[in-house]
Amino acid sequence: MLKIIDFISYWYMRYLLVSELYLVERWERCMIHTIMFILFFGLWYMNKVFIEFVSNYFSAKFKL
Image (cartoon, rainbow, N blue to C red; front, side):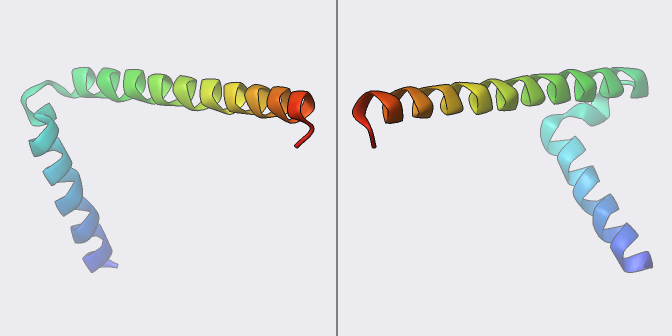
């Protein structure tokens, strides 16, 4: 169990170093993570709806 925690800690620290989030305070880091999650979820949902709409449109139009 300790190896798993060390592994996750290591990669989380690397993520903080690469993204330079280790420089900001904890509440700012939480805010950035929340905004990024909302953006990612919004883009995922938009792509899901858009791709489904386009595929239904073209399959009905060209009878694929």
